[in-house]
Image (cartoon, rainbow, N blue to C red; front, side, top):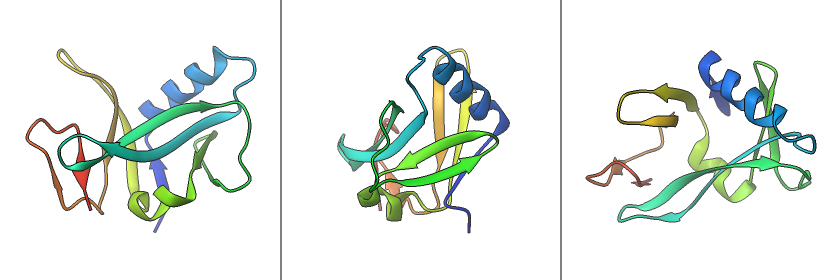
Amino acid sequence: MTAIEITDKAAGHIKALIAKDDTAVGIRLGTSKYGCSGLGYTVDLVTEIDPDDEMVEDKGCKVYVDRKSLLFLLGTRMDWEDGLFSTGFTFSNPNEKGRCGCGESFHV
């Protein structure tokens, strides 16, 4: 099982984000307590590598995952949606057991 899979569309947007910041070396993907289901996804630029993070490289993108989130994110597919009502990263996570009604948070 791949730790994190990045689609071509997501890779393009990750590379564009990193290109806008000379100090960025990748992105950090994680989870935080959020919403009514308990967890939400976080995506941040990485300017300083945390040695405790797990680094995954896919399609030329470096994604750093904090260790506390790694078990929740194993096998997750990260994509980019550019729609009429929603634009941003989307996640297909085999570990999710359910989502809240609005789809903003999940539980495992």
